[in-house]
Amino acid sequence: MLGRDVAVEHHAEVVESVLLDGASVGAHARLRRVIVEAGVRIPAGATLGYGEVADPARRDLTPGGITVVPAPLTGDPAPLPV
Picture 1 (cartoon, rainbow, N blue to C red):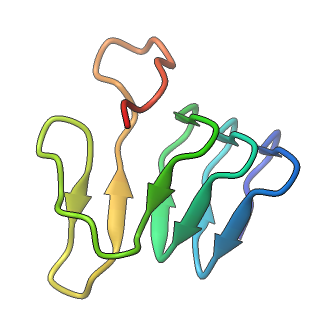
Picture 2: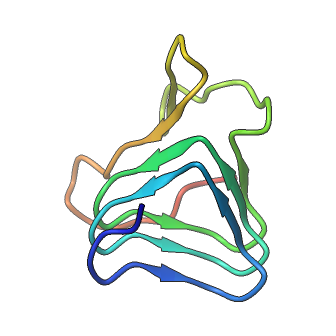
Picture 3: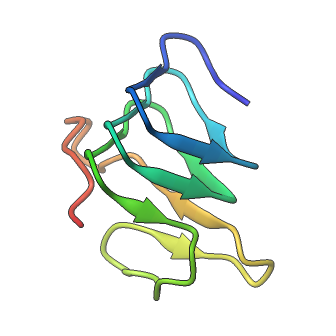
């Protein structure tokens, strides 16, 4: 599901995921079972939802296996570190 003003660049793969308003996914990124909050930028080449360990500073993994990428607390849409 894609919100308003979402950008998914070329060769990015988004499967069973939710991208909220203003989120963006860089080229060649891979997302599976991911919720990306509003305004978050996923950098080119990032891989989320394919068995990586959760990074408490930037993303959470639910008991059901869904990766949640929260919006920055500062309100600045800083890219997600990979």
